[in-house]
Image (cartoon, rainbow, N blue to C red; front, side, top):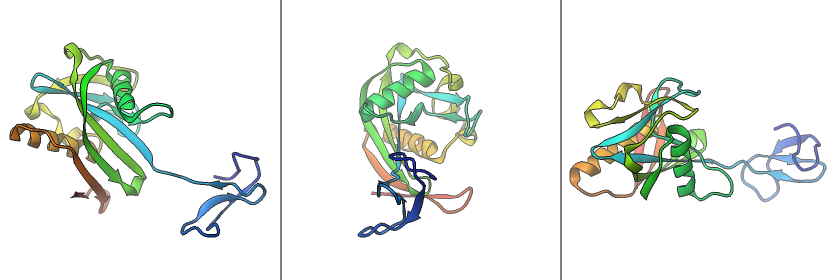
Length: 187
């Protein structure tokens, strides 16, 4: 950030009085510009024994598979955001949604909230952010082509719970160890 969104003057990256970290602060109007984590919300859309995956038509991770998910918008609930993202990415409607997992990913300042719900009539088609969509059972999941570690972790938890015959709500932190290695701490 270079300029204040309040008055347009230059900002400095300093630790404000009484704070414990550096922030962008306007020297003219004294506005402190806080940067907070982004919330990503999405859904495991279930149909019979399958889940809906989308092949990404956008960066990052163009051409790889993911669950329908994206950034939550202002003036919507978390669940509304998950339903909207599913509609935008897969032209799919979801019902009976329940919170399935929440992951904090500090190294990219994101919090993922993933729901589990029923795909209405099994209908889906690619939205503008998807090259294709597919309803896949567990042994058809392209595990090596999953776009994000958090999505692979969500799917693993889903299939573990499904095998046990009951779904829980999961909470954890995904910690990046290096470019290809992650560690997950569950609570």
